[in-house]
Length: 308
Image (cartoon, rainbow, N blue to C red):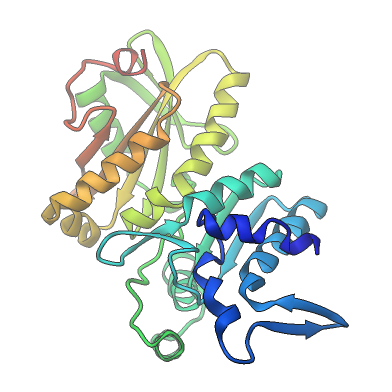
């Protein structure tokens, strides 16, 4: 069957999703199931679902996808050694964009999705509903959720009332920007540094790991990269990952987590025109903690030096 083709080879190489279910064929009465006259191997259930999802997205020219799953195993999620989720498994993200023409892909557990719908877009969701759903997930998986603070973010700083003055002051101080203005279309800001014009993009995040390790930063990078390729007057882009104060404090106390975020951004930075900064805002000032390509902020005088 086409949906299960090369499934064994994928599982042997631990290509997601579903390789953690490889032993289901050994469970009593669970090796196969039938649906509409067809017999399926149960261990390939996740793979079948994934391929059906990719086909549906491609056939219907869907541009943005939010996948909600209660499955928390490593064949769906990238995790740290202490079981904290950093976002969808990178190979899933890579295959999604190879096989479809979509622009964005996000993945959440059910309670994570509800919580972020409430905190980020004002959905009418009670704390009790989130709590009850998380308990169901706990019972279903027989282990607590590693984290459900989430990564649903708004990509448009203009709609979030973000402090343009704080950004201007930071960029002027560290990278020699002489002006900063609202950008057109999907762009947050356009500024000038040295001899070049630069895009300034702001991504709001309540969880640094999931935003950086997932598809959010990658999506913005690809979209802006395409824009810069079509507009040679733009020399580069600085992307801010702006954390809540609480998440910033957590990251500040954990040097290992800082290294993880730094390495993830380093892997993402395949285009030298991009600079990534992880920061928060305190009392109207931008406070940075991580910069890629440089771990320390402000080593160079302007953006022209960084994107060479």
